[in-house]
Image 1: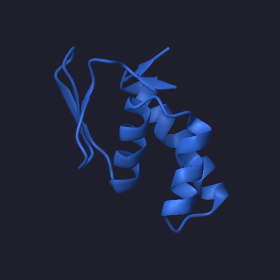
Image 2: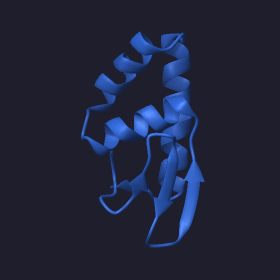
Image 3: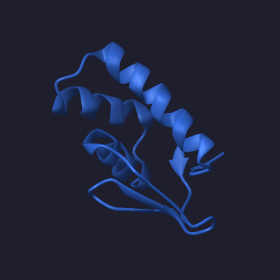
Image 4: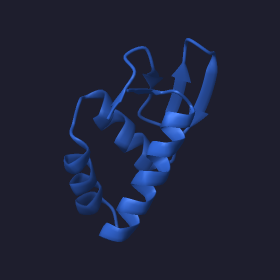
Length: 80
C-alpha cells in the first residue's frame, strides 16, 4: 500500500489531493501512518511501530488499519 506521489501531507495530519482539490485531516496516529506510507515503509513495519509507540492492542491496530486503509482508498489517495 502506497500513497499516490502527488498527495501532499503534513506532520500534523493534513492531507491534500491536488487532482481533486479535496483536503482531509487525520489524527496523530493517522498522521504517523501517512508519513511512513510516503516513505515507502511496509504496512507490517508501520503496524509494529504503532504498537511500540502508542498505547494500543494488536487487535485495535488491525481494525483501525483496515478502516483507515478503506478511507484512503475511498478518497482515491492510494496507488493501486
